[in-house]
Image 1 (tube, helix red, strand yellow):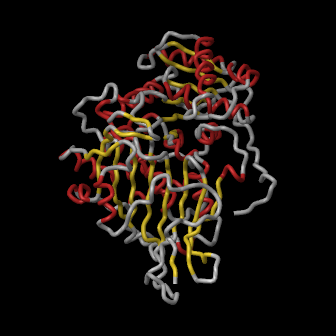
Image 2: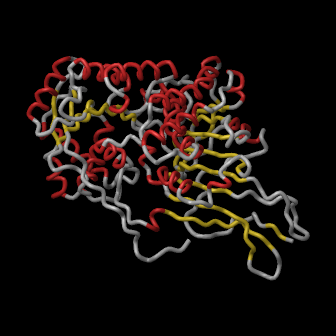
Image 3: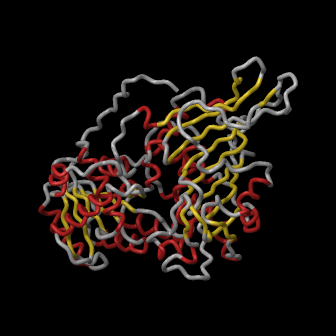
Length: 526
């Protein structure tokens, strides 16, 4: 796809209103790896108010200078790490020195009352009453932190606004999600709650809405008349890494499906909202997820696959199996791969299966939505070798090569009528000189400006868990896992899940980049 040599002008957003950001769990990995880097990037782009302060709260022994040094050391080191968020961005000494003055640290046990008394004292001395309380802690603390903030009166919006940010996982199942929602809503309003999912901060995810609703060419065939099925994949090459305790207690399904994958599902499948605002968009998401067909336990078992990686090799490097990883039991049946088939019972999508899969130690890092269109009903070409044309695919690449690609049938140059499958599309990197980012910048900025459009509402959370619960129940009855070698794309059962329907998975990592190129071996000759 061609485009102008000049870069499109990116609109500059205004700086957010002044506020204080309190971060519970300030010594944790999330804060240094994602939260502070995203705030640093926002400051670099002039999107933070000059007076904004960031206050970490944790029980670990530290002070302002120690907290700043700890973060700086990590940011400086990770510039050389190819897998690190915000890579390819040098840490500017002057910019960091200015930003670091915003960072402060309160050593306190946030499960006790003293921590909240000290937060009161801080706010009394601040030049703004606006405050955000960010839970970068283990999920078991979410409800207690909210309750303590409520008891201390810190969530009252008398002189300024107060917002509460909570990370995933939001519950472990439908019942726990309901209980956590009830805890939060007992001490604050829904308008104050920001349930964050970093997938929604990615440019390509937000571009799904623009592609669908700002272009007249998509909407007429975005339905069961033209779409055969939809695949949503989140594949990783990494293993459990340093998350053994969390991961072994939760597994791939709880870690990825009711949050990340369901958000992608909702963005692809929702009805056009009355406006691209928080209330309208989130209402459509809740309606869509409530329309997911509720399988019974036997149906859920039949329509899913559950796997665990075994020893294998990735990029010619041998890697251990899940049970050989540090701090993992040698008889663990936690799934590192999950695949499931969902049906959406509404007018637009009836009869169209949605296949979801996510896994670790797969052949490539690849998060994508693959939309398969129904083939042309008849190949009207004389002496064609087949009587049905190949399907067209629309690939929405979320990471690592953000963009959209569409394949179609075209004539191969030459005297004969021979066809190839051609690809065309765009990559963000070819159109925009995007600065290094963690994916959290948009979401943190929206928290600061009070825009809840990209955050989950209570009913959306519960509808997502309601759809996943039958699979959890089925696996609780039979927790056996099917092995797959590291470097493979899941167990045999995942492939059988589609083969039963006469389909197959779009190949992980098959996407090769921008431009128009034939797919070898997929020609149609007369």
